[in-house]
View 1 (cartoon, rainbow, N blue to C red):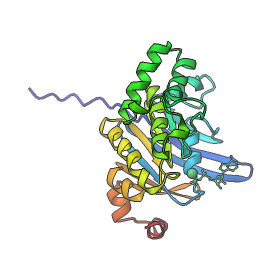
View 2 (view 1 turned 180 degrees about the vertical axis):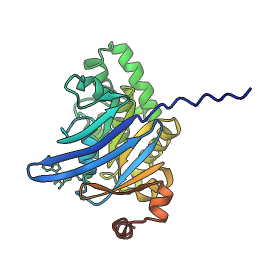
View 3 (view 1 turned 30 degrees about the vertical axis):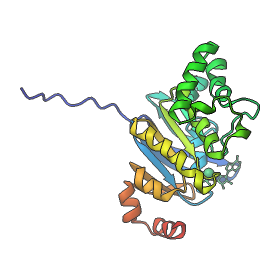
View 4 (view 1 turned 90 degrees about the horizontal axis):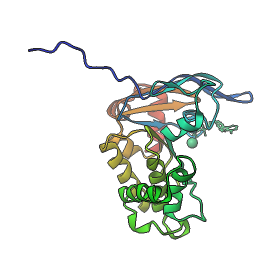
Length: 252
Ligand code: ADP
Ligand code: MG
């Protein structure tokens, strides 16, 4: 028998609409939409200063937007009734500069929020953290301090730390920009594994080849606006806007 019931529409996991952000008189986001479906990998590309970092930071309220709406898995992030700390656990963030605590081991960095924020016991937190360090290929480095790790390894610890909180979505801001070229691949391999496992991610990056290869969708930002958006194929092979074409020519 034919089933004529429509499939349930699960809706976007992240739905940011008309996001504005001004620093004083400088409006750096001028009404940006960023809508991300579950399991999607979206890349933000664009020149330095175009607003990529600010947009990501608004999506977990590291910055307060001055306008627009941001809904994550049906919850209004900007509502005064929303528990921002709970939301932040659901929106993992990975920074260019890793932001690990230098006085804590890899394991200590991954367990910290599990213990202090989630309230896990030491044994539980250690087990969860080890599983995530294993996932990024660093189980044997659990006892190492950040200074004993390469940049690529430090960034993978930062990814494990985000994963340990079981986020619904992970935002990455230039995750490979601080790395020596030979270390970039190890981090991108982890991103690819996460994508293949169905993790929803938004990544601001200058890794054009990786974006072209791995992204489901690409947004090109310039001067606080999404100038063009489409599949990786559409943006990289047939960009429609002159500004997108110029940017891609310059970064190639
Ligand atoms: P991108 O990540 O695309 O390089 P950013 O979001 O970092 O762009 O920056 C966009 C603009 O916002 C830049 O002009 C930057 O100087 C400005 N900006 C970012 N953060 C702040 C801040 N905390 N205070 C004032 N201006 C800021
Ligand atoms: Mg940035």
